[in-house]
Image (cartoon, rainbow, N blue to C red; front, top):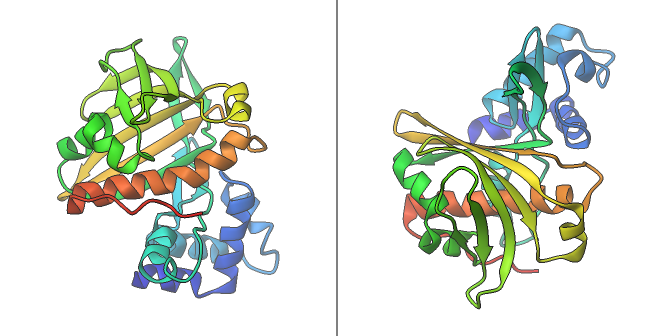
Length: 254
């Protein structure tokens, strides 16, 4: 946590985080506009500190480097010190990834990216994603159902059998990558907004697993964007807790 507290202990860096909260995926040049009295090199140094603290995620495409807010460290601070005194506050999440579409290279920018690190084996993290006995413990009490083949349905059910979400498998490469669509059914407005697309990527790093969750087809002004970007940090924090400790987080309270 030392790097996190160091990162936020500066008004200029907090301003940059606010700027990314308002609009994710900004370049260095765009972020410099928020600190007009500071040199480009100075802004670059502040962003480097934020990245070292895990508060900012970056991805480079061509000559441009895009910066996105990552709420994981703030969530960890919240869970350790703040949650007993205040309600849940979760920031925005975002990211960038190039995909190959229709035979040519096309740059596609997701609405949000969530990144966290989980101590354990990649197979254990994958099992927590696809095993209904695991998802029921952290995915808002729902059990996932699929045969995990490309084109197959992907559904989530409450214990009473009611379906709360559906979609289909777009691509899968166990235990490294899962791409699927997701349509919320628990709310009429969310259902009417249609499905979004989610990509989960798992990478091993020295006894840890980097889990990156990319979300596409989300309008920033939509209810889906607000609900999903607030709900996902809780879901994947619960997954992390389950893999690392054997138990998920307690249920959210209003």
